[in-house]
Length: 276
Image (tube, rainbow, N blue to C red):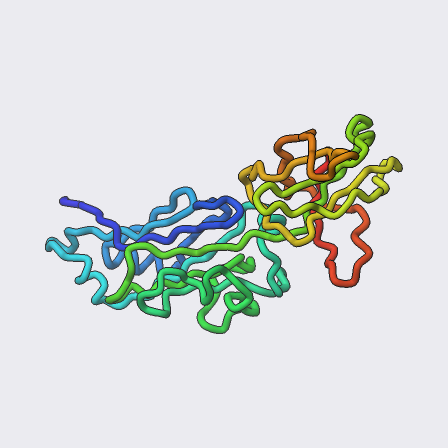
C-alpha cells in the first residue's frame, strides 16, 4: 500500500504571555469528525502548541491533490480541554462564567487567518453552554470548540491568539537593608516613568513593607523585561541616582495577591506583588 501524507492545514495556539506558541490544551476530534477523517483518507496529529490535518496523497488507489480534498467541503469539529490550571492567572480577564460558557473558534470567514473575531481572543468568542450549533460529545463541558470547514479557500495555517493579563505591578521592599534606603525609587527605564511610592504596606506576617505601584497596568510576561530598576535618589541632586537593583524581577502569576489595594476609586484591585 502506497501511503504518502501531506499537510492539509495547521492550527497554532499563541499567547502574549509567552510571545510564541504555547501548550495549554488537549485537542480531540469529535466522533463524527474522526469518522470523516478515516473515510476521506485524512489524519489528525497533535504536537506542542498546535495540531495538523494531513491527507493521504494516494487514496482509493488514485493520486489526488489538496484541491481535490478541499472540494469535498467537509466540516470537522474539535474539542479543547484545558490542561494548564494557571491559564486564567496570566490570561486577560474575559466577561464569562467559566462553568457555563465555552470558547467557539471557526474559519467561517474565508481568508482570515485567526479563528476568532478580533485580533486576540475576546468576549465575542464566548458562548453559553451547551452550544446549540451541534450535538455535544460526552457529558463533560469542554473548554472550547474549534470548527474547521475543509473547503476551497482553506489556509495552510490558522492561529488562535490569547491576550496576556494586565495588572498593577507592586514592588514591596521587605529586607532590612532595602527599607533603610533614604530616597528609594522604582523606575521604568524604557519610559522613564516612576512608580508611585514609597508607601507603607502591612504584610500578612504582621511586618510592614515599603510598596511601589505602577501608575498603569502592565501586561504579564514569561520573559523578564529587565526594564524596571530600584534606585536611590541623591538628597542633594534629585537628578542623580544610584542603582540598587539593576533589574527587578517580573511577578509570578501563580501567586494570588491577598494584600490590601490602593484606596483610589479609579484603580481596580488587580495587583501583582513582587516581594524584594
